[in-house]
Image (tube, one colour):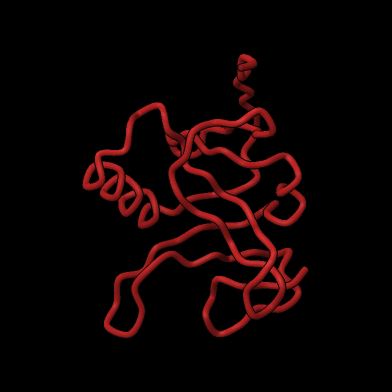
Length: 118
């Protein structure tokens, strides 16, 4: 297995205070190991063409690694073009609860809030 080198540079995304609190709670509640980082990415599918990836994962060879508000963020090198400038927020209201992706690169989004086209 090849050694994974850690790269740290200016992060292409931002996490709000609400998102950070929710992510820290998830990490603690699910006992996620400290060496895992937050994976942010995209995958084909969803009602608008792409959907977001958000979850804790181990670092892989093709990842860029960033520090965002003290959290290790992992992103596949090829996904940066779709996520540059994106802000991830978390809302906990009566009508809506969950992560929200504010992506300036999305040409179109759908009502679910987790699918977009670029």
